[in-house]
Image 1: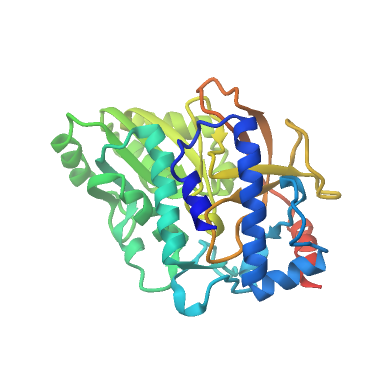
Image 2: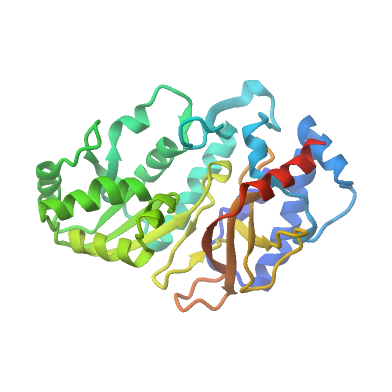
Length: 359
């Protein structure tokens, strides 16, 4: 099974058309589903309740999905517990249950390779001076491996001379940041952070201090929910323009991903579209019956990934809604589906879906 996964990881992330990807991806998703069915007792029980047959080859839209909320209730794994090397917890607000994702070394390596191929498509393979718009303490948290810390550690592999722009109290290290920019001013920069932290503790503080870094060339990647920003009437355009005003000549890339499928992220191109790589796929489903939506139709987002082998997280129904905008024809030239996220669905709808798997 993992041999076939490696075939995906040898292919350029946005190089396959619909026809080229569909057959290969469908075969592997069926193979991965059968693998988890045979190796996870909890997953097998869930699929038996959905009348899944391991003898049948399904189309992508027919394969059973798990509501993402199940990872808050169960520790799902498809390898012996002694092979688990990391337990990652999703980021969550105080009082919320967090997803627990059990990773073995093979899955961890695949996630890192996949992420590196996707990001390299945007910035190249050369390691660049990097600015993390966060505090270094988050990656040293002695508690369970968190999505925020994991994202920072994972993204740091693209950088050299990594600089954390915030101190342990989330205060901007303005003078040190300006010195870092000056030291590396002949280079291209890569910046990374979580959307709300980037806005609240970096962009707003830079504006207050009337600082512009005057970066001549750079890419800023940010990930995380928009709810707090939208509540404050901060649109994607305002966010992007504000970052450029304080940083200089940078490209701003929002990207979408989740703790339950770390590595196979969906990065926003220069035309504002989030893209599926060959390592992942997206389906949108209607709320009333979970049937697949047409392109352009708003639905609940289902994500597929070739990466999860230590746990059955390869096909997940998220708690987000969005719409697929097109496939293979984005002006940026990248092949595959591209889409937009519209926000969270109503929790009652997702709970109802999860209840289906709890019976």
